Image 1 (cartoon, rainbow, N blue to C red):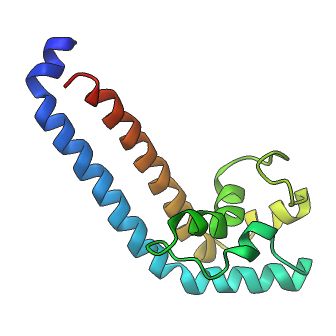
Image 2 (cartoon, helix red, strand yellow):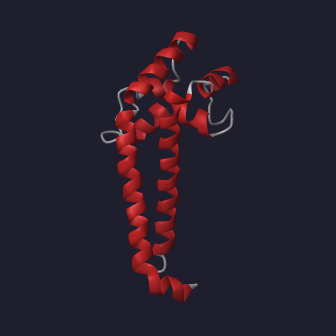
Length: 137
């Protein structure tokens, strides 16, 4: 395995960088496209439950480029509800009813958030792969 890594290391690193940068660029485009759908979901959520979770409320004006960590908190109550099963530790301020409400929204509103979360997961895997490859340089 070590000789394979030594022979193809530049190509592996280049491919990993391309995947990572492509994912980040696509996440930027998706974040711009999802702004209107986010507002629709927040309006429906506040209409039914009164307010959105605290972290989402605090980072309501966050953007992917300006404040990426706050942007993650802004959309986390939507993306985590769509991709992961209900867990009280991941959703400390959400009841099972609120979690189910997000999951039952029409797919034309939620699909773009699923794409965004899977792109984040792909970027995280790519970053871990890069760290793994860097130890063989």
